[in-house]
Image (cartoon, rainbow, N blue to C red; front, top):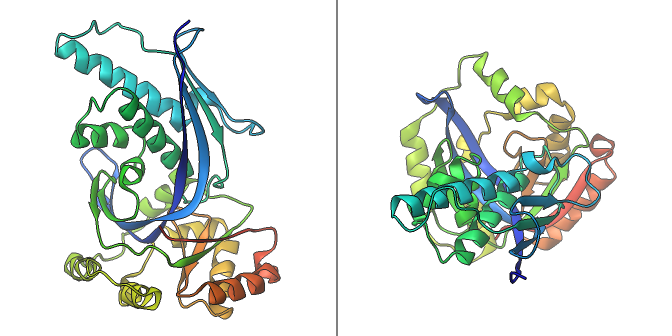
Length: 317
């Protein structure tokens, strides 16, 4: 019997500290300019490679009827990895391009809410790519793995890095910047989600807001300055002022008005900054102390504007 090697790993969520839609690329995808921040809230994965049975990719997610195995990003990531590896080995004359790779079973435990803008599916996919890259002895360069990742999903390249990163174009140009790790984060997720395609469709129906590239370049450059204390990190982030915009927030609020109500509720409760992440529907607020984050969390949990919401208290990593 073929030996089974099992890898246990986690896949952290993210928030977009700001997100600008700057136009469309020649391939029709939207050109983005965003700073993504990894947070300490995750899905769990168990990836088993080898063993008896058909040489296929199997995705299991107990208790989730909305997860369609062969359409899940974990499946797509493994499938693209094996296809790319077959082609690479064949091009190097090391293996026939029709070669079959080992049976791969991905057991997924979902914690990150779907349709939240927190990147759960993309993070899961990146974790699968990282496991397979390790298992097969790092066959791809960093650049090759990044190209493979963006073909799985726009946010996947970021999760190969994690931390705090500027992400441009579709999301494949990733530049790590100074860490904003350790800041308490409060996530409030409405029960209703937002469709990412519909959100971008709404953006396309109107003229895009003005994007001042020089102003953003200057602000992001300031974020490369390392800060030790949480208050200094938060203050540095907040110097962005009016640049801290998510262009997808307006169409998302039009679709799910509760998003706007939650943002207002968080600010009323004392959050100095609150915004939607990604295409929503999750809203986040940053703090410089756990005490303040807990205080706002307790207040929001009893606020009728946040009725039926998932409330998550975590931190940046």
